[in-house]
Image 1 (tube, rainbow, N blue to C red):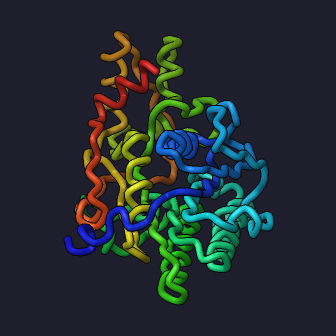
Image 2 (cartoon, rainbow, N blue to C red):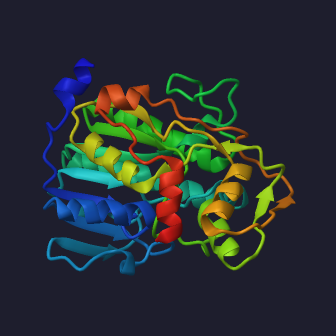
Length: 313
């Protein structure tokens, strides 16, 4: 608890860089920071994001480019880097391990080197709960040995290790946030890398059956995007360094239950199609004690409330 009480709000966010800031989570984070009066530079290659996700604002600078480019000028003068850019989704990394490694690992190292050169105060890395893979107990806690099942998960784990290394060797103020199944408005259901929620909502709104991989008893810990944004801000304003922290609701929901809830909210009675299982963790549930103790973060949006917001968005 001492880390929390002495760590919060030591760093003012005045001028920040957000990679992937035109994407789903990044655009929500950008809007929040602009509302708080921060100057924000967004870097995005627009492979997944789009500028239409962002408001017009005098304190917003938009830069189309890759995190593999020379980042020196963009990083100069920044207080905080929020690194969200990635080539996401587990199945893509199986099909394209080299391409995803280049962006997810080399791109992260490229940013860390620029942050070190310019003495950036805080570097907040968006990682993934998929680094846990399958474990023999729930909830997942940060002291568990990672068990990445696919290249994407390993790439995120390497990013975490680089963040810890830069903190240990050079004192860079890094924190890695392991997100658990983030959802909310601005998710693109037509993206091949979208998670199941926007796809299910789109299909069921058209009276079509969603396809579930396997029996549907696999569970996920769905976390509403506004809670994830809050975690990023708390991490940026903390003095805690080199830590890996879970960001999840702490509530595991089966995929079958998702369909039941959507049917109820949408006043439908649609039966899912059960397809072939894919390589993915069987169960997921976040242990959030560390987030509460080090950052003072507590999720606010329960799944049923969040899914209601999402369906109505």
